[in-house]
Image (tube, rainbow, N blue to C red):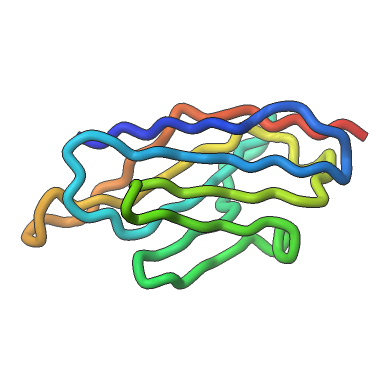
Amino acid sequence: QVQLAESGGGSVQAGGSLRLSCAASGHIFNINTMGWYRQAPGKQRELVASLTGDGSSNYADSVKGRFTISRDNAKNMVYLQMNSLKPEDTAVYYCKVDHRRSWSVRLMSYWGQGTQVTVSS
């Protein structure tokens, strides 16, 4: 079992920055993709950014050039640096990791509990 703990959310004015962190713990064998998703009120959860184990990143068009995802494999952590924040970035942000407990089993996805990001105009 893998547990995820997010931190770094909060309230900020438009144009400001926040850095989200997510720490994975538990019986970790191999973490593949790590990513961040968000869900605004009344909307579906959407991908913000993801980063594979070999360093390939993917960003939502709405955050390209403003957000940067990174990871520390030694610490089993993933980060999301969010700059030039806009009110439309307001949402609950969730960390997700794809993990396998051995090389012979398939990947399973684990989610964090979410952290609120509020951007005021």
